[in-house]
Image (tube, rainbow, N blue to C red; front, side):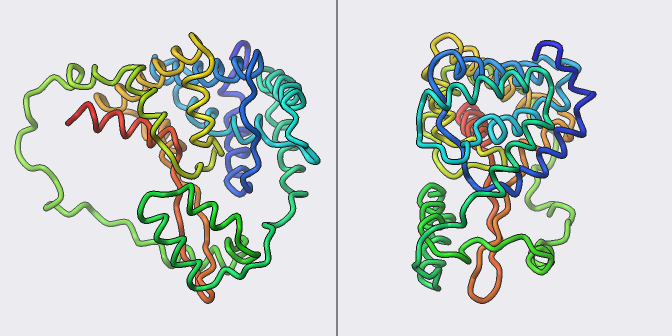
Length: 299
């Protein structure tokens, strides 16, 4: 990211991540042309920083999670004008390259504060709640989020102290792993790097094209990832190769858990059960893509 010195801005990125975790979905589609290409190049650099074990690796994934929610935040009063989106993204990319996270976050928070509540007049009743749960548990995140978006106020509860307290009570206490779930004995004498060499850029692209569902904290949607891996020629190829290198590193060696914590985090939604609270966790699209690629190579 040019002269951007990540270590100086770690706490700004952490603050931005905490803020975007509470954002409502409000991103515009990645524009074509130079701004879209530069956006993909920045995402590629962050993945390359992790894959190559650079000094920025510990916070590269954090920065990547923050990028879409800040740079692709739809402006207030926007009429889905592609030219407007290109200009908006180009301006924000300049701020990003300068390390001006505070200005980007201030703009995004201002937009979020003025977003209207979910529209619609249909009550989020027991039947709708059950449909939503079925969609989530069957892996159909897109349909689940569509149900939420078309439901009345109360579908997703605000994060008040009472709601947060209820969510904490539902979260199980940490326990040691059950030994019956662990493989015992001497690990097999295999070359992991040889096995996971099959995780290449082409496999990442294929996995991205068939990965669907709701976006996590970053607001990086399945649609965004499909466009990033397909629509920018060599820039897209470079991104797929960088993500493949990240996947191979995760699959073959010990990685600092702090470096992966934001990639592995879920977006929590407190669903109103009328009465009660149902916690829903939505992971990152990139995590699903990498997971698919690793599992396919291992089988």
